[in-house]
Image (tube, rainbow, N blue to C red):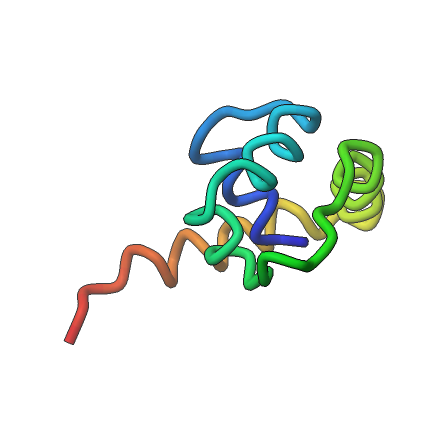
Length: 75
C-alpha cells in the first residue's frame, strides 16, 4: 500500500484517481507488485491507509526513508 502513496505523491493523484490509474496502467500495477488478476485497492482503502499512518506519525518518516533511498547514486 505504501507504493500507492508514492504513486499518488509523484503524480499528484487523489484517491479516486489513484484507484483508476492503477487499474488502467500496467506500469502502475507493476510498481505496486500487482498481477493482472489481482484486486486493486479502492479509494476508501487508500484513504484509510494514509489516515492510519498519519495518526501514528509514521507517514513523514516513511517518506523521508523512501526519499533518502531513492536519492542514492546507482552503483
